[in-house]
Image (cartoon, rainbow, N blue to C red; front, side):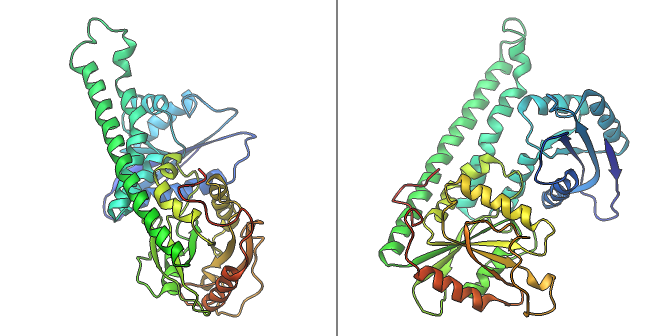
Length: 393
């Protein structure tokens, strides 16, 4: 176990402690410290002031996440440092969360709840809000039931009748009704998107989609390629809502470019499911541009995470170009070596690679030519657009 504490002199924010475990002998894509570094970024995006970290290496997974003795140590740190919120680096099951809240007597949230909170802060459109709310409702339902489980454990009878038990059923009904309403509204969004895609297909317009890890520079590249003014910030999840604009190519063949939500380490399944309406755009794409922040020391790991998510969505065979972005952070000018595709974790899914700096405009003209050439190639069997309503999930 290690414990490190830092104190900020900036404006007061919610004081948070980060907690993570690793299991000895279990292969992990990222080290404990690297995973916590990203969790700290997420916590900052969620409005927390990270004042410490607490880690443990376990011989095997613990049913209470941490070992019993370590929970006691954690409680001491929480009390000594005036911690208001403890953020765990993995998704806790309802029982773990309830146990930890009872032991620590402070707010306990996990990585999934934190990502959902950041998504809720970033959503700008009605569609984005609907998708985040649907994910939050699905995440909440089993935990809501857990809040009342102490009544159920009493076995009914004296002390269990009345508002407590009925409140559980009322709350469950409210959340389920909300989930049903959200599902209906999201289906309406999906239907409208399908109609738009049908119109583009009838017009023989080629479709290109940007994919990549969050904060890889997709929105900045989108603006360069489409002469648009889409929000582009150096922050996690600055883009949640799919934006589509005309893509200007040297051949002048009609094409559109879509900017999509970024992926992240330990991406919550409830978010992937809730954002199906958005991610369906990827199935209709003729070409995907996988944007990688080549200045990141975790470029290979981030690229691998995106590849795994795309494969899980049934998009592993979709034609793809690897775009190694943020060249300006590692080079003084546009003159550059051959793309370091091995470092970025290039897979067989990417047919070509190009280095760019969306900020400086380096490599963007070359990327336009590559896109143009790729869209002019014959479509391989199994790699084209999905049939109507076929999303491959």
